[in-house]
Length: 212
Image (tube, rainbow, N blue to C red):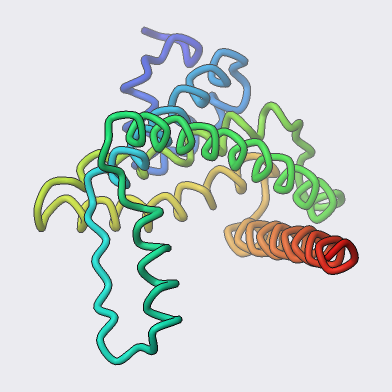
């Protein structure tokens, strides 16, 4: 396979994890990489769902007052999936959440990055950003190993940490900027995301209070 357009999924996966810049650039230019990124996001959602359905959440409520203990138990129960139907719903919800998060994250990074790199770097489209963000999630596929006792959670944690590094490389490639500016773009996009969530929660709270 002599062309960058013919690189296999496995080659790209290894290249992304190794922070191989040409691989990231090839992903940005290759329209077919969007479908590959979509598959990674779906797999990540399934991995998260499997981790949720196979992990036991136990919280010691000793010393808590009755009301707090009841609230904690309700939250714990919400993340306990016993029946097959509950497990399927958890998997589906995890995949949908991953897809929504992928789109929102990609759009915010595109919005912030194009403005921060207007004079210093390249502009990128939302689709190109989705490709790079999706591939940047690749190390988090280690979440599939989370159910393995002791080693699994550690590998999943390391994968999550490394996904931040690959995410920075994805942003750096998207806008052709320095590592520092790429990190700044990620941080600013995250802050915009938090502000948006705060506004939505505030509006919902005000509406509930108004009609209460």
